[in-house]
Length: 602
Image 1 (cartoon, rainbow, N blue to C red):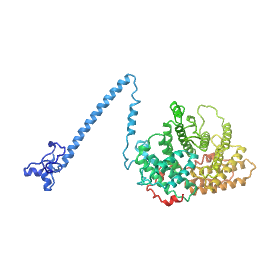
Image 2 (cartoon, one colour):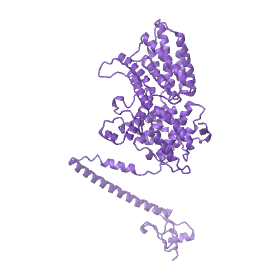
Image 3 (cartoon, helix red, strand yellow):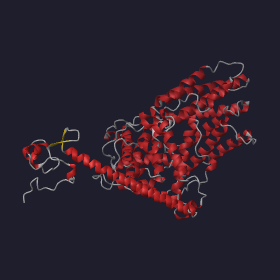
Image 4 (tube, helix red, strand yellow):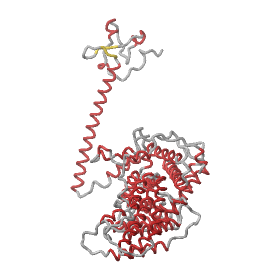
């Protein structure tokens, strides 16, 4: 039998829902009531219309839509009724269990959540972005107008495909990254990352190699390494770094649940973003993401290894314990570094940490230099906290002078025990430890809330520390060993301000000292600040403030102003407040093309 329209299977529409069309009615012929047109109208090539309840002519396909909609509504109501019955039955069951003394909130909700997380997710829509996965929506916060950081990733446009450089270039950039990271913040393990490179470069003709996390981490390492090289050689452009970072963000937004799983790897991914934003000198973004990282570290209980479950795991897998410790202390280092320079309290106090330093041997271990850097950050934050915060409210007497003397001895001992260094390394230089010692001594001996007045001996010591600090920063800037200008610029400003204070105070006290030598150091400080401001434009505020101070160095009054100590709090009086709106400039709205020439210059 021929497959005519009249013989085809009709759509699943009840005859009661469809009436004969107007053409068949007027011709007084039988209408087969097919949808969207009957066979008679289809053969004639004319519109097949019927009359609705209002007497208006409408295409007969609308009757199908309305009937389907009505059927869907009935099905939806049936589902709601079924769900309500289930909820009532569950509530009755929970009530019965609670009456028997059984906790119903422990396993059921967790099992349901685990089932949701294990479900493979579909590709996200175009308007899904990273920040909406990590922070509340602006409408959900108390002060929506202050949530400008939501624009950080809203406008980013990512490349269609991830383009990795040639394998030798990737290995070279990875070596550059780990030369720095293994010293300052060992977020990733170098051996494990080389395995990632092997996986991603198995078949360069295919883009399907490796997982989303592996691709993300490689893009971030490449982006950070190029930024790092730019800090040591300004002639190296950062265009490729921007492109790799855009690709990394594209991987996150494409399959977010594959990357943000609330585990240790999730924390590592956050810390990679923190490292990048630090090298991009965007403290607003760095502060935001380090906050997410520290909250996750607390949720994972990385700061407390005294719990039984953690101890048992440590006996089972030493590599996993080292990895957990290394990632936690990397979080600690990055947060402490930001908190000190931004004059902000740290989220994890030292008193709450019961996790040892990572081992310096074995799988997933840390380097001796990284552990020594952790010890310095602990001393640095203790000085910052003690000098700038009020004492405990329990009324216990605290001997600040004894603490100050003891802290100086601890700093000198720390500096004397620096592990062996590679003299050829520009990324882990001895200059760092020398500079860290003297700028911290400047902070310790500068006028502060608890030490507003200094003795002549203390002023002479402070002048010596400040002069040495200025000279070390001059050498580091000249040799291209300074990388974090957002940190070194206020440090140099503080050393110069301390030296000016010593010159004024010693002169007023009638002390005999070589004033011309100290003034020459002030001139050197001003010169270096001008050079730093060229590399780091926000540093111009420090430069201008210091020039104002040095211009009044010879204007002696009967006594020093009482608020002079405000110039020693790491230059916070000239540090602009965090502009979260301005942080949007970090993310490229249009990712640059990855020019192979750029990689040839590396």
